[in-house]
Image 1: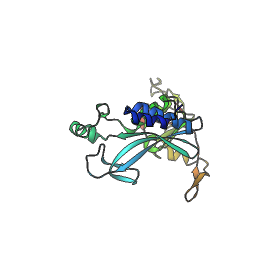
Image 2: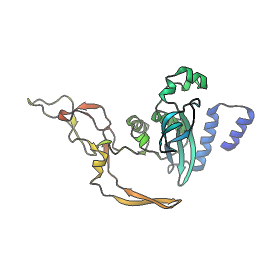
Image 3: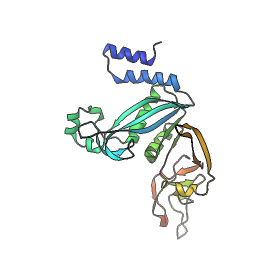
Image 4: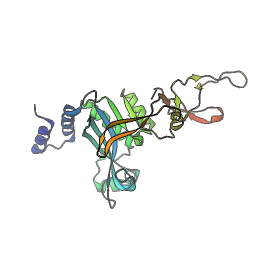
Amino acid sequence: MASGYDQLHHFIASGTWDAAPLEKALLTEADRMVGGAEAWLIVDDTALPKKGERSVGVAPQYASALGKNANCQTLVSLTLASGEVPVMVGLRLFLPESWTSDPARLSRAGVPKDFEGYRTKPEIALAEIDRVRAAGARFGCVLADAGYGLSASFRQGLSERGLVWAVGIPFKQKVYQAGVMMIFPVAGRGRPRKRPVPDTASVSAQAMLEEAPWRMLSWRRGTKGRLKARFAAMRVRVADGPPQRIGALGAQHLPARRSG
């Protein structure tokens, strides 16, 4: 059987430019190289600094390559990795609203009709994960930084797909203790309320971790020696459920259905 790269050469030589067969062939080869239950699927951003305004998707936005806001193109990237071997399996351009709200600009740049609508980077990432899975690529866990982890819909989308995942979240993200219970508090006149509320208040992730035991761990060798940092682990329930007014606390997000 021809490898993915042999098939790629065949597609190019024959003049067949439909992207789907190419992507599937390359994903098959990536899975052969590093896929499996021990592999990781890593979601991240890739920024291409650009001058001017005519390159598709270019706009003032956060450029990860520079660590600051700058004029650039931003792409959502997916990498399949096993051990210390990474293989790129997805790269999709993000179009800011300054582009998707300007039909003339889209047309002038030749953006395909199917890609003219606005999609957030987490939405693009979930679609790419679906594409990678549909092609048969195997992985045990999805990883993403807080740029994606702060999105409740992204986290919920991963859980709805039955995936194991670990993502960064902002230190201000509200969480509940893992054992939080939903109760029906009694109103002032002795009647129970119609909707249940958490039996404890949510707190920031930073506050929750203040009392946790921390320890120094090293995971691999980098260009300047072993990479190491302090870690602490706690099971919590993220406060990204539906908002509900809870007495004097005002509107609060209820606990997520799944533990994180």
